[in-house]
Image 1: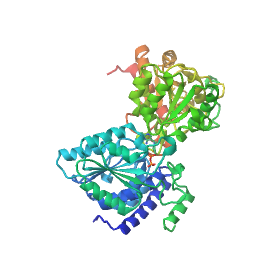
Image 2: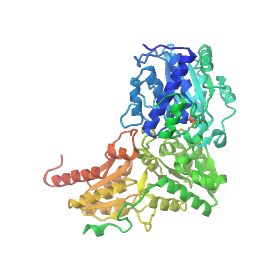
Image 3: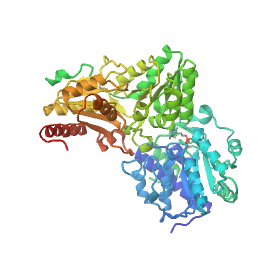
Image 4: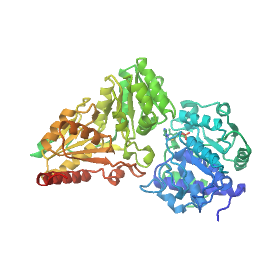
Length: 278
Length: 334
Ligand SMILES: Cc1ncc(C[n+]2csc(CCOP(=O)(O)OP(=O)(O)O)c2C)c(N)n1
């Protein structure tokens, strides 16, 4: 039976295993988004193993909390988390990016594996989450909706339309998390199209904002989720400062590992750093 | 007989496979030297679209717009209104999908001189999967008045297309893909907007193709030739304005038409050719392409196989069509 936990040591161990699994899956697929998968691991593990009310054995449970991965390209991390939570066998991770696989290159709506929304085109996910949060309110259901955004997709106009909708509609059952790794496809965001001052922008748009200086720290993530849950009258955003490529020295803060899978050599090195013997 | 029917712009044997988006990037750099008014915009995919090559050479005329496709298209319109020649690039699905209405209102309607060169069209995108595989971009661009729509078939044609459109006034969409394309043309190949190129003369069937499917069509014609079926192969690289004359002429001689594209058969080349023929010279036809479905993850070139977009699928369509035609002569139509 799946059980949630707030034990930070347990969560850290899950995160380590998730990193191993997502890197193996990416390596096997020979393509995919390594950097932005690694930066989201703790956020996703905290959500699925501590925060969300969900049941991997009953993915269609109608009162489950919802999660939307708006940064769809980071889905290898989500697949690995879902597999660890028990939505599907871990071996299936090696079908990543294969024709007909449930684990497509970008997530496709499929509750059988716990994917709540089709994403991959940036700038859609927050709107979808708004729709779910509005529906929950309409149905008077105690459902919370979580959505993970990349910092890059905050350059999409559509994201800001959704940010306005959420605060205007007072969606206090909605919690957004920004994976603030400061890199996008073309390089460091500050060199491409800077989005600072980010917390001020969200605040000006009517959101309650919490900035985490370390988005890989479970204690910080859990207490931010606690605050989000008790905040009333407005939506809540956690701006989690993260490291693109987190956990693997050669990938950390290296823009070029945004959209490529680890080579044989890189995988070996990565697994060694994660304490996995091969 | 048939060997001599192959146009002398087609290579005898494939020697190279080239990323046509890389040809785009390199050609942009050369044109940047010739045209000081040329500017390039890109929406966070500069390394994939290869506009990064231009960016290295001309940083002051290179605008990284971030993940903001709509903003990019309307900004390009502003550049055009100020006398610049803007090239705007990103993946085809975002260029034509996300920013469609911006293109319609701000570029196509006022006939602005914006060059939209989109890469990663079609299923050959591969592993990124259905969300990233534009299978409707030709339809979306073709339906806009004033828009010129071009799909190069290989590296040689890509260079000629880019060099041609920089001189052409008006909104232009060029569709490029991610995968390496076999180089099918010799250097003497000439591209002209609005002219379809007959690459092989035939008698029994006319195959109209675009993009990587031109190669598959040539391969199909070789198989058909061995069976005694002589096929026209026509590269319809300008989808709009479409070359009515050449299409009708080939259809008239052959009496049977097959289209081949890495795009939905609805609204793409198949749709465009069907429109031409049903008005000018109704001809039985078959369409090879994506049969009104989304793509999937997988190796880009293997997906051509997976979705039935190979030479043998064209051959099969030709067989069906010729059987249909001969049956039609004896049996009355239902
Ligand atoms: C609308 C849209 N435009 C472009 C892309 C291509 N793309 C994939 S990831 C990415 C940017 C990556 O940066 P970021 O969004 O910050 O993600 P992270 O660093 O967290 O991986 C881009 C431009 C896309 N998926 N969707």
